[in-house]
Image (cartoon, rainbow, N blue to C red):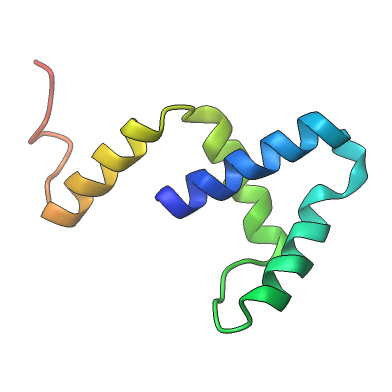
Length: 82
C-alpha cells in the first residue's frame, strides 16, 4: 500500500511540475523497469492505477494504518467507529 501511495505521489508531483501531457507515467515506467528489472508490477498500466489511489488518499498515515490492519488480519468491523 505504501509503495502504491508513494509512487502515486511521485507521479502527481511530476505531473504538477511538468504537466499531464508530458507522458510522465510512460517515462517513469521505463525508468523504473530499467532501474529495477527484478521487480514486477511497475508497468505503465499499474502506475496509472497508483496515481488515483494516491490522489484519493492523500494521507500517508492512513495508508500505513490500513496496511497494519491488513497485516494483522483485521476486518473493517474490527476497527469500526461505532
